[in-house]
Amino acid sequence: MQFVPHKACLVGAVLAAAVGTLAAQDKPTIATVVKISGIPWFNRMETGVKEFASSTPTVNASQSGPATADAAQQLKIIDDLVARRVNALAVVPMDPAVIEGALKRAMDRGIVVVTHEADNQKNTHANIEAFDNAAYGAALNERLATCMGKQGKWTSFVGSLGSRTHLQWVDAGAKNAAKYSGMQLVDAKNESFDDANKTYEKAKEILRKHPDIKGFQSSAGNDVIGIGRAIEEAGLAGKVCLVGTGLPNPSAKLLESGAITAIGFWDPKDAGLAMNRTAKLLLEKKKLDNGIDLGVKGYEKVTVTKGPGQGLLLVGNAMVIADKATYKNYMF
Image (tube, rainbow, N blue to C red):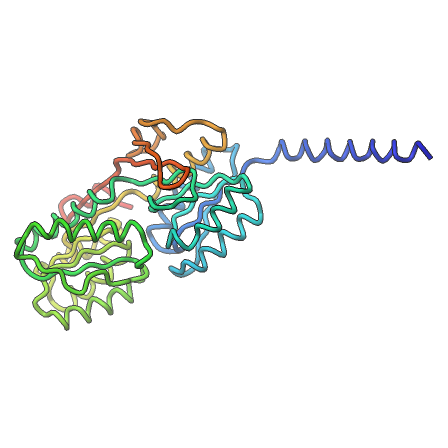
């Protein structure tokens, strides 16, 4: 009778040891969650995530995201990953406020959380920005102002009214434009939901409503495609100015035609690498000191300060603004 519990204890000990060995062999998982899957911007980011995975065999790294720009769908993906107890999350929030609760649950379970494009995110260990967002928005607008001769009507587009960085960019743009008494902002902050077709329809509507409009400043990666198409079809290429966030390859034809004046961007591939490398450092309990080099272009000397919550805010220097003369230097 006394032998049975002894045997049970022995079996339990062997099983525990086996599970312990298996756990030790398991590689930590870093799950990147983007705003929307299948569009050029986040396809490029996935290139960075895959590069990180192939160059870091001690880690499992992957990327996922909703099929449409929907904060609720993104939240469901994050909830599922938290339930599966991944080791780290690297998230580009559609709307930081919507996912605060999910990220808190993740952190409470010991999951490392890294975010991008969300410097107001409270429940994150580290949020990474490619550059100072106000400086970027002002730089886009200054390029727009120059094209417009610093006078005339202009408008702005954002992916959504919950997209933190997009609002920062257009607000900084409006502040910059206020320096020029001849510039008039009309119908500001049009939501595109990063859908080129929706942006195209909205841009056509604005061109009809304001036939004398001189400029557009846009934020989501697909906005310049939709707005540029509307400008080109209206025969206004080179007459109406368009400056916004976009990638060189998708924007090439419209840059060449003059329908897009200039694009601003950072390389999403490098941002994906930077997020995953930061997550790995945090999993390894390493400090993120001011001036840290993440080993990624544009993130060699990162400014590190306290974030709005318990985490840190990391700011790189990865801003690029390109036009017809220079975009071929950045073909992705």
